[in-house]
Amino acid sequence: MSTHHAMGDDEIVHGHGQGVRATVIQRKQALELQLAQLQNSDQQGTAMPKAIELALSMLDSLLPAEQSDIPPVVVAQLVRWLEANQYLGIVDEKAKHAVPRH
Image (cartoon, rainbow, N blue to C red):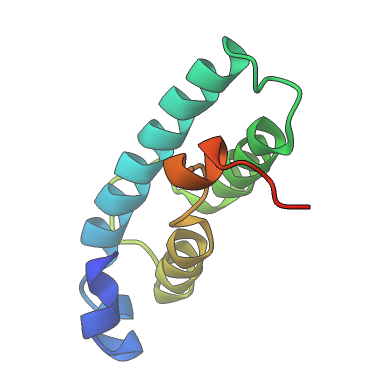
C-alpha cells in the first residue's frame, strides 16, 4: 500500500512532487518488467498485458521529462495514477489454482 494516504492532499501536492515522481517511476519500472514477463508467458492473450499497456501509456502523458519542480496539478494526477494502478498486475496465487465450483 502506498504511503501517500497518511498525508493530506495539500501536503502531497506542495513539496512532495519529486517523491511522488520517484514512486511513479518505480511503479512504472515494475509494470514494464511484468509486461515483458507476461508477453513471454501463456498469459499473453489475456486482458492483463493490455491493462498494463494502457496504464503505461496514460503515464507517458503525465510524467514530466525534467527533474525540476512538478506543478501541483500534475502531482495530483500522478497520485491518482498510483492509486488507480496500485493493484494492477497482482495475481492471487490461491485464486489462480482454485478449482471452480459448479
